[in-house]
Length: 228
Image (tube, rainbow, N blue to C red; front, top):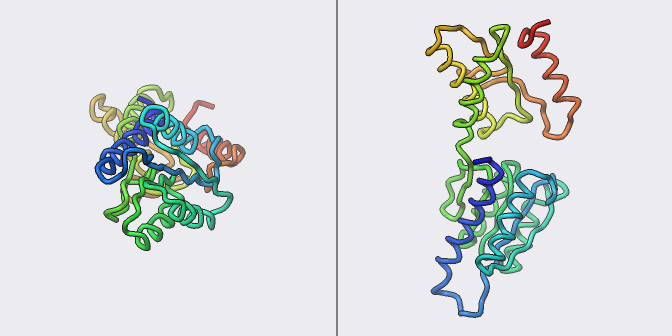
């Protein structure tokens, strides 16, 4: 199952849970209102914002939920948009992406009766916040194992857009896959771009620049991940 599909289904399930929890308290004619706050990628980012919205659209169609979204143009919009939805009476606010984690923390602390379900974050501890994050290290373990079996130089490389707990899990899974391949096959394939012990590695510094990503890819090629 792809990570995008997991986002759609997790949003749908969270809304269904809220719908069930609110059913006894709400009048029969009242609709549950679920509201998405995007990160700065916008609602049509072809990634988590878009798939989160797809989950809400399914909730609207299949569960009769009222759905809305607000796009964040800059980081300062995150908490502002959540406050707008609180004032609008949203039963559950769905912030999308780790970039909103700090804003969710502040908003959830200030509004303990408001429910939140943040996508791609699973480390917040507030009782009114539900985290939704895939176990991506399981998928990247397989990718690391495969890469170790395919390398022609005995080296493989990796890097991420920005280092934070979720992308560190990407890298850890990749490293574990390589380590397992080495254990099974008696090889010594080397991983470049990530150190599981220090939790440090290569990062682009953003998720937007293709040129920056290409530069790191070429750096890894020059360091021996592909024959020259």
